[in-house]
Image (cartoon, rainbow, N blue to C red):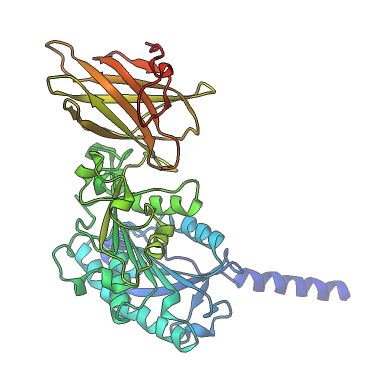
Length: 464
């Protein structure tokens, strides 16, 4: 008898546990996109206490949640247009990485019903409706003790504009908004109240990675980051024959750059500048020339730049950088500064390799533009490497005009200086009085730069 009762109890317990399901992000299909979906929003709450099983916040009483703590910071993650209906591939990563950093309320805003449609204008039209729904839920949180200062919204594509609309409803008093490649189509050319704007929160940072297609070209935030100029991202397909990746790779890169910043493998350093062209020409690598703060970093820790400025309303700034094609994306940047004494103007490319004392050698990964060398004028070339050496034992330079016909030229160099931009306190390395024949690699041992004069050691033989 006792055994029978225990068996019945066990079956009931297993059955009740099986019935308990974790709310999940809405998973739809291309069929749903073809027929269209009516807008429905659910807020999926994750915390460190329930990071593997979300809690669906009730639309009638958000603060009735057992997991929501309104005294903590609250982060909203808002996705964008979903033409196929599938959940964003990056959703689980951003949840795990954010909760690993801080103990806060993480709310995934699921508006897949409303974003899933082949008719993009329908999804774009729904953005203001989603914002109104979020406003009602946040009002409930505020009534239960939350503060606008502690609310941080991360919006992707159309989600960036949703965050902006919510911020407008609170007169820009939200703590922070991060826009990850805000959508361009149907928003470009619109006034500030019809899109994300720098007045929508106390701090608005934006990453632009697809300004020539699905992204928004012009600045929208207090600081706007343009990796690789904001258009074609390294490693992304260049032709339509690559399939769907051709359409979404550049647009999604903003998300993956943000995710990389959460992992803290390296700081993705950026440089305030008025254009990508001037950045590539090496005109903007000294951050103190623009603001009395260190170089801003892209991603989650971008707000440190605002704190360093110590200004309530940080200036509208554009910042540029080049990245690698895969994680951790960071480049370690250097300036090569060359003074020549050729009487005639020379124009060409400089290729550089550096070697450490263990014999490890790396090439520059940054695509450099041709440099013009004028007599007794310093030419500055910005280069980047995929790793950094604390101590450099050898430097190799190759000069090329890329000309297939005609005479070969030489660069007669008075001084070459290599200085780290990523680590500006590092020792500057120099070499004096040598020649670079075209298309011939010249290797030498650099020495610490001297302010005046040239010592005998500075004229050690070149290793060609």
